Image (cartoon, rainbow over all chains, first blue to last red; front, side):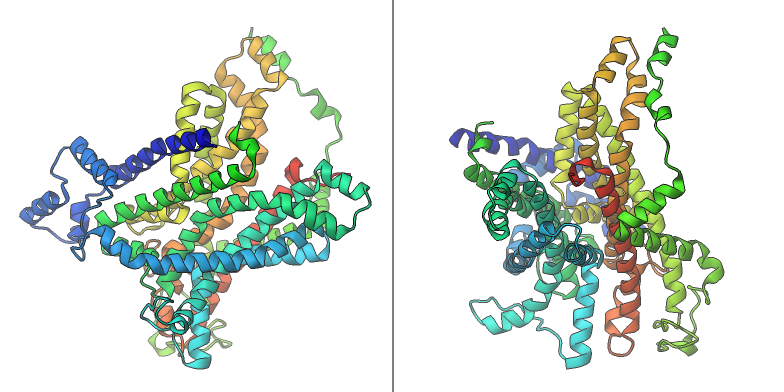
Length: 317
Length: 301
């Protein structure tokens, strides 16, 4: 196990380095002068002095390799500079917004797991029967409905029928759980249902694969009851791939957070990205894009380690 | 030399087997995959509406009519009007064209570039493969929407930029799938045989590997279409897609739609139904196509 962990840890270094390089390239090489964009120069004429000052402030007057080294050094020290909009360090701004997004992400994951695992299992066991069709249509339908529209419908419903909008100020659950619940319940529904739709489909297909294994046929041949075969033999063995889901669907979750926080005007990390893009706050955009990739790599590392812990075959591959 | 290779490439089995007619194939698909057929119907309907919108739409989607602001859904305006008095149904019909254009071009570009990289990576192997694989891993570390958001933010809001922003995150996903298929094909005896005959690399790739990755490529393409339409809607909603007054579905839901919620809820309802229905059709169709073409998922016995 220790060698596996070491190997897996060493493997993430080139990925993170590559991600940092790619973010740098996207922000610098794609045509468009960042300094000009920030000053709004794409529509009007701009004072050359102002432009030079902005370039100096962003460090864009330095040669490209120098900028790259500065960026990498910042990444290593977790120092991403200051926001152009508020003047505060990016990391500080991020930490203020993190608890809300984490709570939303965790609750949505929980809701989706509770809904999706039984549904996916049922659909697989009754493949090509009406129950399977219903579950598949509902989950494909769930995927088709854009998250932001569900958010809009929630607000529409609340405003029209109850004349009530969700509270605007974030209250941590340890201060006032009821206020926190009032604020979070609809966003959790909005993020969670889409997540549940994906997980249901994944559970269905892993279950289908497991149901075709030899040991399942043996279990049937022994004359075991359906419930025993499904729950004790099939479900247990298809749970492991479901752990991987949490890793692969992480990207999905982030996309959900961005859109949902914008609809509900929640001051979380997702909306921070959208606001930074809207304000042309490039240091923040650059930092946040790298940090999402960073957290994605970390989540997958954790998933892989959990997986190896449960399944010793992987450690010795 | 060249004639030898021609001989090696006759497809005898294909001509011997009875070819099912197109009609029979369609009938079989409808009977065995009712969900897929329903999806195909929705897609065809969406295409018909999108391409005929110029003739069929009752109003000009761009012209404001301040005497008909916030009109309720009625005989004149089936879906009502928005804050500028523009007819929502006409705007949704024109929007279908934009959604289809972005969906098709973005997933086509992404899957084609990704597919080519996948084939190259599998065939060349060695350092090229290692480099491309690492690159794809790194690209995959960025959530689709975040990467599209970053690219769109630098390119600026315009329909063609949205296409680029959506297609880039598709590339690594397509490359992965196609590479895996191409690798398994490369191991086949017939590929070794043409290799032994001294066929050029380009020829092996084009005539022996590419035709065999067409099935996974098509599955990928249909699977990405719905997602691409959804991504366009999300980007437009966030203000990074098409700019006003383009009748993009996502844009129609952004900003003002919610502020007039009490007065005119239909502004926020109909475009959402259009997005959901369109993506639902593509997903249903793609799902059934994968079930039908992927032998791993085919039912035994």
